[in-house]
Length: 144
Image (cartoon, rainbow, N blue to C red):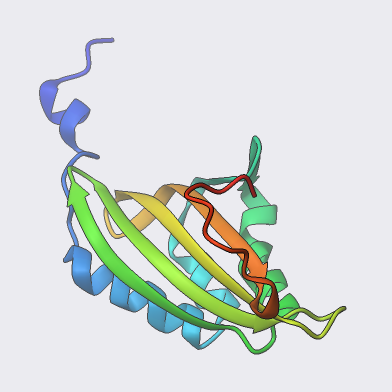
């Protein structure tokens, strides 16, 4: 079966305002709304993170609610950084209280959202977390 050029390019163009998209994702995560966060993904979506880790299917659908249950006082700010084709890039800074230690955890992260229409079908995340009172001295590089 020959795929037309139109078919090859259908997923490579944004159908959303990328700045508004990041603002809406931030709003949903600030509200800790697991159902709305999960609704932003296509049925075949995959979230990639960590060392070969991923969420898909039912695990992806439950992931936001599980995270909000873990980080009950999550405060997060997301920033639009750029876009190309059907990919939107953003960063975030967040804080929450670790449920077991009671320590305030700070995070910085970056993410790529690949969209099909208005929904994410592929999401890549990288982040770094540390306890607020344990910020290491700047040695010029990070090994954590």
